[in-house]
Length: 115
Image (cartoon, rainbow, N blue to C red; front, side, top):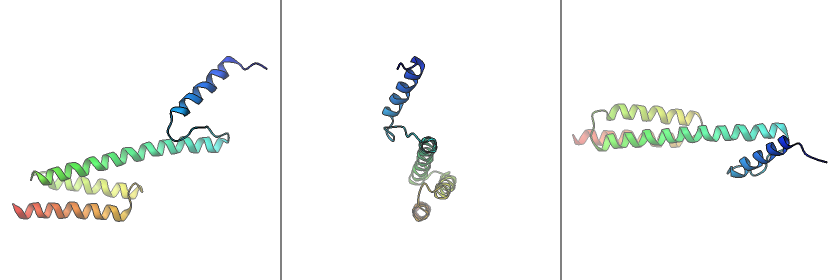
C-alpha cells in the first residue's frame, strides 16, 4: 500500500515541528487532546508574556525609587496595577502579589523619608 506524497509530507512536517517543541514529543490521537495541547501552548505563551511585563515594570519601579526620580510614584502605580492583574490571572499567587506591593511601597516611603 502506497501513501500519497502530500499526506506523507504533512506527517513528516508535523513530526518535525513537534520534535522541536519542548512540551510535546508525540501528538495525541484524540481530537480533544490535540486541542488541549494547542491551547496549553497558547496559554503558556500568554503567561510568559504577562510574567515578563510584570518583571519589567517591577524593575523599572525599583530603579526609579533607587535613583530618586520624580516619576517614582507613577512607576509604583503602574507596577501595582501590573501585579494586581497578574494575581487576578493566577500568574502569581495573591500572597506573593501582596508581598511584592508591600516591598515596593516600603522602599518608596523610605526613599521619600531620606529626601
